[in-house]
Length: 140
Image (cartoon, rainbow, N blue to C red; front, side):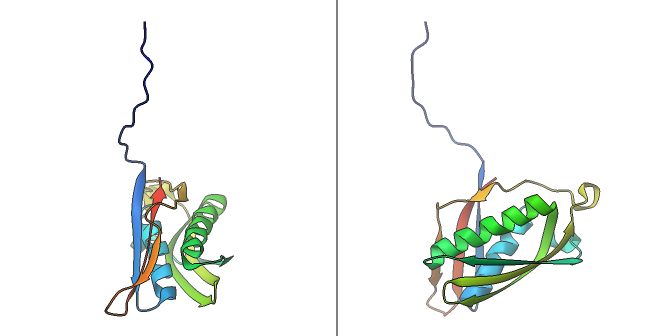
C-alpha cells in the first residue's frame, strides 16, 4: 500500500540573469546578453543577421519580462543564437535589436535551452551609484 504525499524537491531548472548598465536601456540589453550567454559563448556568434524586437508593457518589470521572452521566442523560431543586443526605450515601449546567426551545434556547443522568463526575482532598479540593474530568473 502506498501513502499519499505532497513533497517539494529542489531542481536546477532555473538560472538568474542580470544586466547592469549606465541606463535602463543598457541594463535591458545586458540582461538579454546574459540570457544569450546561458546558451552559447557570445564570442562564438557571428553578427550576420539583425532581428528587430519591439515590446510594450505597463511597467519596467513587465517590459523586462516581455523583452526576455521575446528574445527566447526569436531564438527558438528562427533557430538562432545571438551575441549582441541594443535597446532604446520610449516610455514603456522597448525597441531592441539582436545580432546573431543560425545555430551550428558543432561550432556553438549550446549548453541549455531557455524556456521562458519568469516573474521570480524580476526587478529593475537604479543603484545609489546611478547604474541600473535589470534581473530575472529564467526557466531552462
